[in-house]
Image 1 (tube, rainbow, N blue to C red):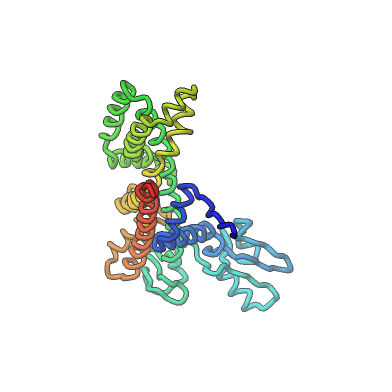
Image 2: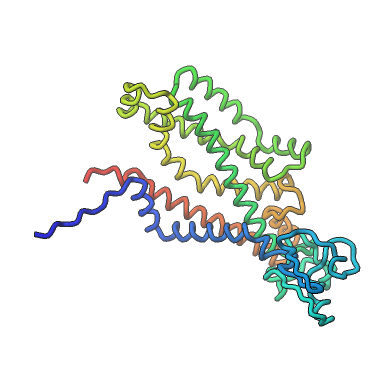
Length: 352
């Protein structure tokens, strides 16, 4: 008889990953988010008012890569950086062998187009400006793409910092227990009683808040919940036999905490991470909407939503920013739901 091939055994993590990929809504949302984020990181190459290539008097320059070039370098009689869209038009009219290769979408998110567009902003969507302009004449599509990059980078930074601090504190409280746990919980309760919004207002009045400053502030107020979850997981896991065996063979407390217990306490952290990303994006949008977030002219979804509220009859300022925010948060929630279902311990802990 022919030998029956044995199925390759998979680890729990591999089976969870396979289960996650079968949940199409979450899997496709993850792929879409990753692709969109990668494209947003490359936005300075294809959404920019700097030309890709300029040929002038037989010499080639690459402004999108090399940075600032004065207008006088290309024969323009203006002060400051060259206007590459206007330069392209001038070269075409002169027909002297010079040419300009612009980016596919040749507008910068902070660039005011009031001088080149007719009428008062905001302008409705057109062939040149696909999603229109805002009340300062800036291109809406460019600001949406750059705002997506800022929002997601901010959210990832907040989650990483808050998780790192929360895991460290929760692991210490749950593993050592006793007086360490009691004292630690009191300190966590005191810190959680600090008013978050007032702290942001004070910081905004003293400093010009950057993305990294706000990331640190939100992470400083977002680690308490993770610490409590991690504390509970460590309390539950340290009572099991494999921890007793590690103690009996003389493993250090650090090795037991982060090599033995921590890998078995990851399930709730991974399940909550996408929802923490949603909360961080929503927090940044809310702070920008209230005026305590990123300073103008930084591309910000919250500032764009505020513009939509101020120009409620300009439909493109209402529909496009809110749609981008809704779709992004919806996809992240789909990812979170799929992860929660794939990491359900009941699926891989039944006796068969």
